[in-house]
Length: 239
Length: 310
Figure 1 (spheres, each protein chain N blue to C red):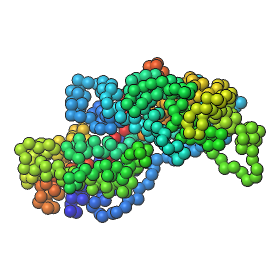
Figure 2 (figure 1 turned 30 degrees about the horizontal axis):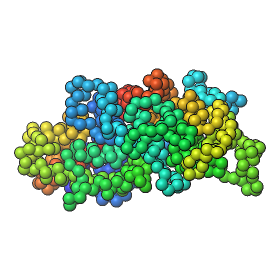
Figure 3 (figure 1 turned 90 degrees about the vertical axis):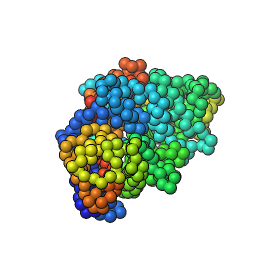
Figure 4 (figure 1 turned 135 degrees about the horizontal axis):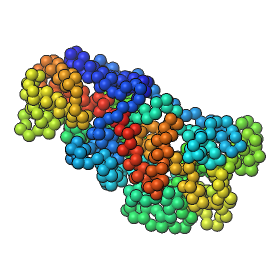
């Protein structure tokens, strides 16, 4: 990942989570991806010898000896800039995988009615997948995250058999000295990101959980906050 | 609330800064790569059972790629790739079957057929998924579908030819405004105009020379059987009619490079870079030696070390 791209990911990730904290309604995001390669109407380098570089390798020479790579991108660091955003279908499936439920409000599934807002193609009137992390999409994503995380917590709280919170009951008061709580924090991380958290990841997430619990003394809200933090992170939204 | 937000900010910062070094992409874990692969090939994350297979080493990523490529979900993903690639346009006539090209290509990919049939095949695929012969016209895969031949036209089919070049060879010519004054816009007129001739009659990429391959196709995408196909030329190769165009294309390095680049873009989120020509050559060789099977190309891409990095 190039420095510019890495910075943009950081800006986006931080912005994503700061929206709810400071009440910003819009985000000033810059598109840092290089613009499309300019199309040159001048003659292509062909057999009569036009401008341009003819590659040495015959396998990179096309008809008339033209350079097959002429319109390719120009990246300084090979294989960089390969991180993508989830598409609409992926968002929907990943939320289901991690929270065990869909995005439902008052008994009505919300995904289809928000397909366009999340950039999904419907193949009737729209035929492209818009994966731009627009301010509207970010805010809507957070709205979705708060809802599905609330549903997950409420569904599991007080139940003997739980879907997401398998280590601790999310309705029980939180103590970070409780090993089961830390195990649950690590388990959630694995559930969302499919990898082992580092000790630092667990410490920070436990800190968030404790702070959120102290803020309102409601364990369900604290677990919900952690769930939202994971679900709305750039780490989750990109792949 | 303030303390909650402070920790949330810390989490965000950690997630952002804990990523790869600025010097280049770093390898990701097999499980993280499985997530990429699963999302790209099925549009969903891996199931618990799939994760277990990789974690316990009872399946390799290559085996998981094979499983995903054989799944019903992959069939739907391929269909969507090509519905995006062949959308209806503002000139598409009413009632045209706009999903026919996507169905043909899905059939070829899912059944692991020679991908050159996209340009040369003599069959179509119905909405029921059943393949049958294209009739009443010289067949050339998706090229001879009514949707492909009616969704871009232009004067003397120049818009169609420009789209064809971009889509199948990656060559992008710039449309220029017609300067003030009287200009003969016929093929002969532009061929004799020094300011226009290069882009219009060039033996490699000439728009008018290419458009002649489609001369016997009507604006509604149907074929005019009474028409005599003229001599045409593209990529320095002469021919007559769409089947000849399809044949010369699949024998070209431009087409092969464009197909590899199309799939590279799907899985890497951008087109190939000039600094990745070695990677391209290896992928192109895999594609060719497999008998131009796209599934072999996809497997090559999604099991590469470049893919399993970020």
